[in-house]
Length: 307
Image 1: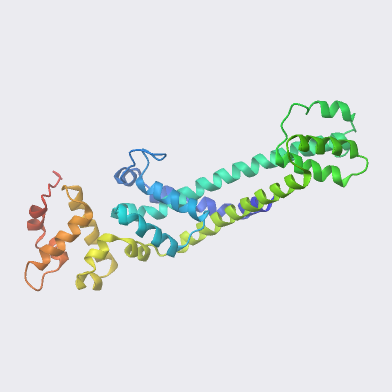
Image 2 (image 1 turned 60 degrees about the horizontal axis):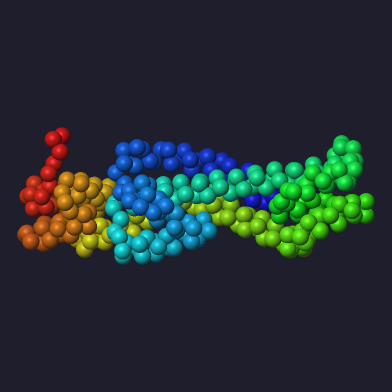
């Protein structure tokens, strides 16, 4: 078993926990509300999926809160994200990491199957593993038209070199095949070790990132990335409020944006203007959830649903 496979086997419970979290935190109704991409490789998927995928790709699946905050801030200079999208970043990162791990696991399993195939050929050549030794010419003729993968060649090299000099004819055949492919035994061994090393780093990063994502206080991270919060924080009453109250303000912004032609950022800015235009004791909460709500709804063209 390779080191990358050991990481996967030893931490499988972490992966299962991530999948359960995704199912719990991404109900269909929430998913439908997320803005979707119109074109590109992620057309039809939520816009935040493209953002999360790019972040994971650029960091080799390594999660870091400071990197993520900088990445999202750079993205929002071009395209502000909604409140729902910012909350969905954690879920989407989990989805992308699980998908990356799935692809890595496929590669691990495929390489293992190839190594087992090389072992079977070595057993037949050497008469080990309970297999009788078979004629060299007959066996190698079966592989004349087959392209040998790097993983297969390296495993066979290791097995044959361990039994030199009896396996020298087979080893000579393998080195000739490698030379015909424009490479050498040392080169394929080096390439295979580099591939396994890269796979181990990626799987380790994914597992460690899954652990880190579960340990992060996403409420604090959300408020650090939210452009709506940045606008509302100009109001000292918003700053001094408890988190549940600030969340009520944000839900009001979302509701008013859905029922009007304005973005969430526009609603937050107009709520601040509405509060500043009144008496000194008014704040943004007066417009969003307080006594000025009806007047503010009219000013932004909000159309409530029948319910």
